[in-house]
Amino acid sequence: MQMVRGQKTPLSNLTPSTTVEVGVRLPTSAGVTIDVSCFGLDAEGKLSDERYFIFYNQRVSPCGGVTSQGAKGGDQEVFGVDLSRLPPTIKRLVFTAAIDGAGSMSDLQPGALRVLADGREVASFSLKGGDFGNEKAIMIADLYFKDVWRFAANGQGFNGGLGALLAHFGGQEAKGPAAPPTPTHAVPVPPPQKVNLGKVTLEKRGSRQVVDLKKGGAGSGQIHVNLNWDAPPQKPGLFGGLFNTTPEKPDLDLGCMYQMADGTRGVIQPLGGNFGSRHAPPYILLDKDDRSGASSDGENLYITRPDLIDRVMIFALIYEGAASFATVNGRMTIRRPEGEIEIRMDAPDPSQTFCSVCLIERKGDQLSFTKEEHYFLGHEYADKHYGFGFRWKAGQK
Amino acid sequence: MAISLTKGGNVSLSKEAPGITKMTIGLGWDVRATDGGGFDLDASVFLLGANGKVRTSSDFIFYNNLRSSDGSVEHTGDNTTGAGEGDDESVKVDLTRVPADVQKIVVAVTIHDAEARRQNFGGVSNAFVRVINADGNKEVARYDLSEDASIETAMVFGELYRNNNEWKFRAIGQGFAGGLGPLARSFGVEV
Image 1 (cartoon, each protein chain N blue to C red):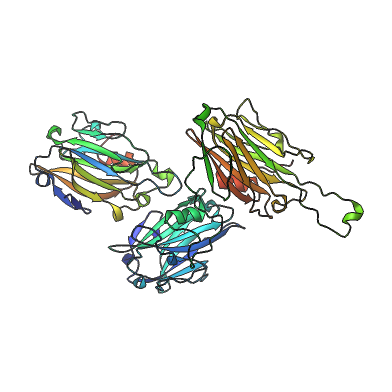
Image 2: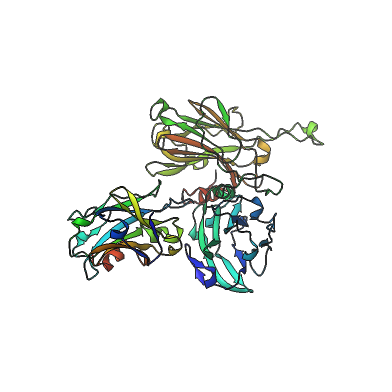
């Protein structure tokens, strides 16, 4: 049976057997890694027993009813399922896919989840990138018990990745001995805090600070974004003392992709000389691009009318020089009348040259600042992730 | 104790709620828990004659025509998100004002812009329809669509119908291909 998104059927329509295999094949564009997992949930749809999170590092459920068999027969992951062995507390098996690192489900090549009985395909649910937007983790399909065992093609997910998925299932990361070593960035977003004043450091990816725009009257309180970095320490080399070489200070660029409440969008960055304006739309100004390294205060960007934005994604870009985020100790300081927010780029990916550092979003009178720190190969990939929808062509500074 | 109906099941309102004249038909669904476009579900009502068609276009009650000309049926308004507890959209029915030539009052729900948003009822959680007696606000009957909701984008949830001088409510759970336009046309509305 070819299933489409949203379709449900009693399993008995597919096979009389309660022993099936579920195979997942989700090819992606190069460089995108997808982890396929199975969650065994209780009647409330929660992961009340974390031993029922079956994935590459926990391959068998305690009852033996779900096993991860790895790649097999063209599928990148095959789960063996024996429904009769599941304890009565497990009412639903959700087969999921999550992207580790950059990219989103819109990057998927055509793939499928298949249900096999006695080695024969009895149901297939096709998926492709066009089915998705910015989701990083999806629930592909469910085997669930409601009077009888049933199968549903789901195909919905979360932009927040595995962390958001775990939060949806009420699970927690890194708890107990059997806890999965899920990627450290997959931290569920904590509830927005309304703390103001003083300096706040957004420690983890996804952590967020919310401020109220109304505080000083609409429009008041510009946002000042500063990007700063260090020259990498000089390696004591054999000729270090002889030639008195100073390593070139690496050049980091600050910029942003923005979408205003009125729908206009654009990119502010030194590349192409798009410095914006402080007094005219978009009321975002990049004040200079100091390539000499002489400036001690890094690069600065001002958002003078935060009440007019929808969202602004602030990014850092590395061009040349010592040229890896891993060596420059990049940090961003965001100053508002209420206080400072600091974001350190402390999980750098040396192979990527573009980093989305902070996402500023306005919802009504509230501004939220979220630490992103996702690394991409370039603008286009980041845009794809955030869904601004720009047209890109190659450019040079 | 409200009667819980399964697909196709019916209940006699005059037996379950003797003397019932005014009622609210409540419709509900859960707001989308995942990311992506939200579900905007729209309830609509059709007053049908014995031939299964509307008598006039004004018998089609929906977000742009919230009240039947005789005042027997009133749609309380569009909810575009499904946010909040309880009924997301509701329709008030006054049986005493239903014209004698109306045999059936059909309640349907369509997913707004379903094709463009690539949505169907399979993605909507916990959809239900229920009949509440306005006298005492007591639930008389309820139908949870659950497993009956799958790839449909338009769905007849239930209907009130005359049967030997009494009103009954039936759980329908019948999908319909296409959106609100084709559904309305099938009931004889010129759209």
